[in-house]
Each structure stands twice: as C-alpha cells, then as structure tokens.
Image 1: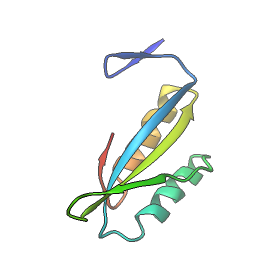
Image 2: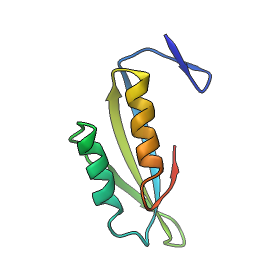
Image 3: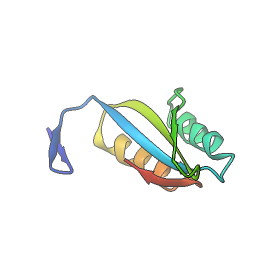
Image 4: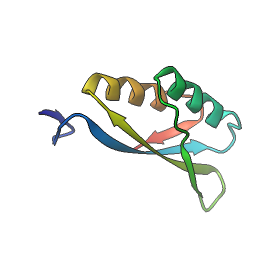
Length: 88
C-alpha cells in the first residue's frame, strides 16, 4: 500500500477529480482532452456547475490509476493546464 495525503491507497485505484476552470479560457476543455489522450485516457471531463458570478466552471473526471506515478503525472499536467484554477 502507498500513502497519498495521509490516506492509504491500494492500486489500481479509481480517483475522482474535480477541476475548477476559469470560464475566460474557451479552449480549456480541448487542452485537458489532449492531456488525457497523451496519457492514454479516452475519457472527457463531465461538465458541472458554473459559479454564481459566472467566472468559473467545474468539471468532474474519474480515472483509474495502476500506480502512484501515473496519478502524480496526470495530476501535475492537469493542475498546470491553461485555465485551471484548482484541481481537487
């Protein structure tokens, strides 16, 4: 078993991401889909809610990881994609 933020994880693990993106980046979703495809993931994030002021959009993404390295690489790539404000 490995630890991730003080929680024990057993791989493979199904991981739920919540991506909060700035609405002013219209190509945000295309960039995230490119990252996923490069990582061998054919899924697309599911659109969620828009913030009350209309500045942010949320997306949900569920990915199964075989090891921690895969998880860390994808998390890092998504977190630094243009338009991403937060990755939870």
